Amino acid sequence: MKKNIFKLLAALLALAFLSACSKKVAKDDYGIYSDFDSALSAAQKSGKNVLLYFTKLEDGGFNEKIVNDVLHASDYNQVFANEFETCWLDFSRERFSKKSESFNEAQNDRDMNTAVIYGLETAPTLMILTKQGYVITSVSYLPAENPQDLSKIVEFERKNIDDMDKLLAQIDQAKGLDRVAKIDELFEQTKANYRYQLRALSDQVIKLDKKNESGLVGKHLLARASTKAMECYLRRQPDKAVECYLEPLKSKFLSVEEKQRSYFAAAYITGKNDMSVANSKKIIEYLNAAIELDQQSELAERCRFLLERQEKILANQIETEAKKAEESAAENSAE
Image (cartoon, rainbow, N blue to C red; front, side, top):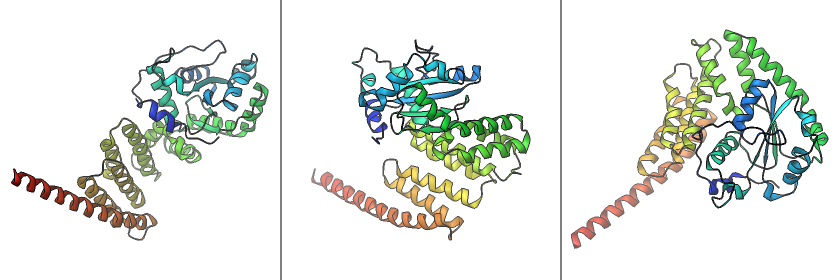
């Protein structure tokens, strides 16, 4: 049942990414949080990791079983509460309908925020997180009949959990460039679509290594550009998203390859905006700038391919605008 859940949610709810006010929500009668920020706050106080469940109950199947037979089982907390805080978010269509008696726009926005930054694609999905909200692992196939079955799925990830706990402890103890190296180790071990949660650590790399002695500052400048662009784009501010990738180009610590990637990203995001002559010219400008940095790189080859296509698009746009101008002038003469 592979399905992108956001094809549905995007049509139901205008994203209020990072805009919803945080509000503490208590555990329910099963000892489970229905608000991620509240669960994360509790985890930071208790020092426990987090089990974050995403479901879509209206689809039935494993979604219903994981809720009815696992989360709502009488012994769920006996199995998991000593080690984990638990959060459960459901994305059934009804809860996003303003006709629903349980409709809560602010909570819906917060839950959408969580689902977007964690890259939810299918339901049900279980994510095992650190108390900071970093992703240890994600499991989308949950054939659990009871909490004990689910515990076996979690235990299968035990080495990953222990390794992450160990690395985070090393980061906490490290200082200076040693801390920079450990943060980068975590960054490399984290899948690209889960690195948004590491944004504060990338900021630390930039601040701790002011002379770029590690050679890692450029990488983390680009990582921060990516997370800032994501926030801008989801706030419907694509022009500012482009600026997020242009800003790092001012740094002397970006390598040629990193500068190429910045220009390429700027061109890509501009291409997602309304197509206009002005935007086409910007795309061409960014692609040319990337090519000039290193004409022999693989990315330069890709840029040349896109540049040729964009130049044709621009020529058609200019021709279309010229025809419209002629038609408008003819109409005005006739009047």
